[in-house]
View 1 (cartoon, rainbow, N blue to C red):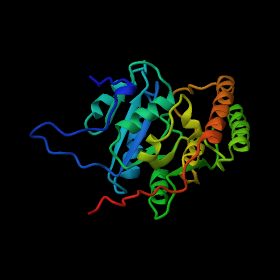
View 2: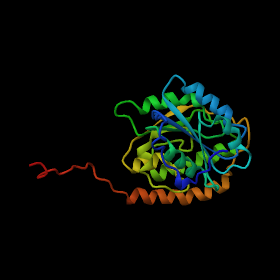
View 3: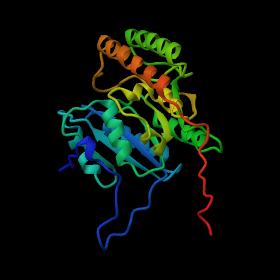
View 4: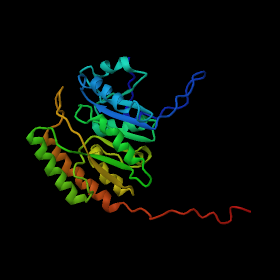
Length: 265
């Protein structure tokens, strides 16, 4: 049986039971939020393994957002080799990403959409860029050629243009699901229900640099999309105004110095 964990209760793995050798912490945790993607999870897992098997020490964390199509059952035979956490109620993609990041043990996080449209083969390049000296805290993908229907491409283009004009975050494709970022930097961000669509702006608002590189994008081969354009647009306007408020109200010092005078005698 797959463990069910509410999103607010997930914590990084602690000390192992007595007599069990500790598992070395991986450098990278691949976090995959999924909802009703039973047909996609195992092919996607195979691609992740092929992309990362010789690239870096890693773990894969699937976060099942209360699927009802047997997604967790498809993953169950992989339990142990793959970490599986489940929401007890449907909570949304941002909640699933946050649950996965909190459960992750890696210093770096890579996120992928669970529909198979992101290409795991792009992860090593994004990770290499993120780990360079002086690198940004977030490296986001820019879909080189969007493989979606015309209406989704048009809606995304309008949303990206509006967001960039309002937030000036420099990202032409914030909705691209493949990103690599520092776990500690993400956990310092404020959480809200659609934050995954605003990660570049949120990282920048909180003093981190974000860079972007082109990545592959593929057509959905199995299952159906869970998003509609009109609903996303209406919610997105409200969220955009909220992030603009955060940007205007967040003030961070240029530097922080500890005054140790008088402590040493």
